[in-house]
Image (cartoon, rainbow over all chains, first blue to last red):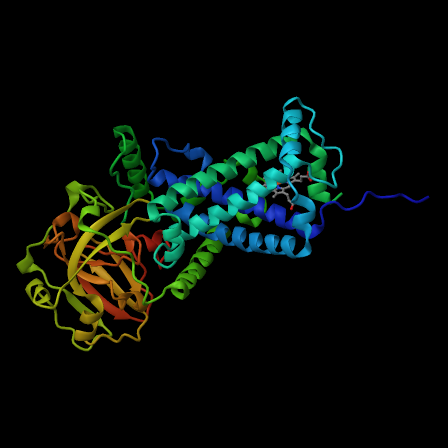
Length: 199
Length: 261
Ligand code: HEM
């Protein structure tokens, strides 16, 4: 008797990178919130219990350690996707009309998530957004980290203080993506299985 | 910046109180272990429980190791010729925030006549300098942005002796690794030689054209627009050149040593 196993949807390298990225992002997000709390520039603070690090110095240690994981992993991920053609295959094209139709369908609870080997338009858009958002997060983060050394980037982002706001807004975008991403994973748990086991 | 969680412009009273409370808590228990608190409250991270990453001691060791690597990365990124941006008079932040590891009420002062800058370590001529002798040296001025480790920044105008000129004058061994500082408010810190020799590193005697006032470090501070505030010692009473890592007040509690910007 032959058992036909379903094909691999997410190769091992992708799964490893995805979970490394998720870990790095969560560490950066929660330690970043505590760093923000040390000197909030908008009239709110983030509840301390949601933050990582215990105090500013601890949060900074986590943040400046996890950034290497996020950046190293991210560069690898983008390089492999770009040069293997996977980026074109999996994420493009995004067709605005189909995207709109799928968004409306999703709101009615009828999102087509049947073919796990292909990302639907909403997913493509969401993942491309996450990639661009993380790039903006990293670039603005570099300016905050070494504003004198990355002078070109600093001027491009409108100076040190402006880069702080950009970093925060990009963080908010990434956090919003994560919330939707987690909700979708809850609604379609089969995708989680494939992101864990590959098929 | 320097040193602690201190309120400044644009915060509501409630925020200021909250900030103050946080800084008190920090003062009361600078336990290096406590930075891990919060790790367990995170649903996502509790996944890691049982694995060595949430084991307090080894996480701390790992983070400290990465922080040392970050020192090296910053030393490597540091361009001795690249200047921090300078600003116009009109852009100066007024009032410039006071910041230390204690409240404004606890600022210590010293009579200029009773003060001397003591020198030691790998320096040829270690005689002490009075404030008037320092004032007699060629002076420089800069309007630069001071960036605090907490994230806020403020633009100020500082004047004094270019530090590399001073190091040369006293015959400091500039092949040494570190310059260390001791302050009479019990603060201490140290910097790398490359930054000590940077053209904008200033042995600072004035703020906004006036002798350095007590809140900004009277009589002498070291100003480096290429480093975060806590690396800029105020109230300096002694400095030394050495190859033995001298650490620093906040650095010994976990802030990154290089603290570049
Ligand atoms: C921490 C909890 C997370 C969970 C449970 C999770 C779950 C998943 C799952 C199940 C998929 C596969 C979707 C499918 O096959 O249809 C996926 C893909 C993806 N996730 Fe996550 N994720 C998490 C965090 C993150 C974070 C923090 C980011 C980025 C900020 C992220 C970015 C992505 C991207 C870009 C993809 C597409 C990967 C590719 O095919 O190249 N995820 N995630």
